[in-house]
Amino acid sequence: MTMNQPLQFSTPDDREELARAEVYGLLAQLFYAPPTLELYEQLQVAPTVAPAPGGFLEASWTALVAASRRLGLDEVRDEYEALFVGIGKPEVFVYGSYFIAGALNEKPLVALRHDLRRLQLERPDSVTETEDHIASLCEVMRYLIAGDDLAVSNLQQQRRFFDAHLRGWVDALWNAIANQPRADFYRAVSLFARDFFSVEAQAFDLLDA
Image 1: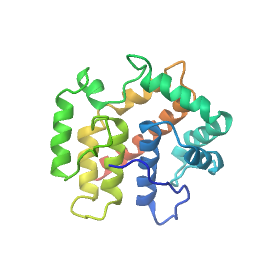
Image 2: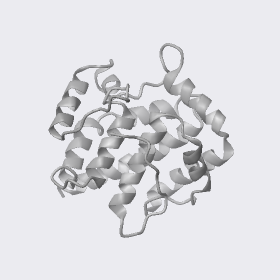
Image 3: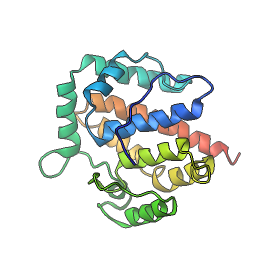
Image 4: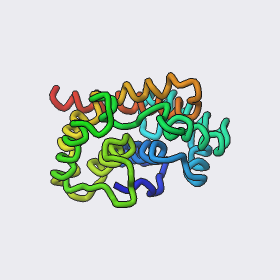
């Protein structure tokens, strides 16, 4: 579940699945660490339209690009540290167990690790965060969309993982970030993520319609 692969912001119209994977990859990078200079420069010159076709995402994507143009990278790095690292307890926890069970390293993490073993995925030694970190979960979704093994990377596995490990708590995370007085760039990130995850949830719901 690596988090440092380059992103491409323009995707052909017939590559909707790749566009979805790239959005998950972007969110993984932005929540795993402050953006690199290369990524931030990509955001600053990105078209102010949704990276995947669809008007619902366009306003929040435009706001995210605008925030990257308005704020310096040092400001964004300071904001990331203030929100997600801090001294002692961070302002916002970005772990599924915290939102589901009210504490870190609880039963939701055990269930997640079981599913990751089933998918033959494991946390790299270089990653110190637990697997229920939002960045790690976005990386798994990216793999389930864009991976080469069709027995694992398919729509049914995506829906199962999304429903089990993301759907029930991510809205609370986006709201927690957006409501932080210090949040500026990451408020824009969280609102874009909220809209994107809403589209994902609706699309998975339609599979049973």
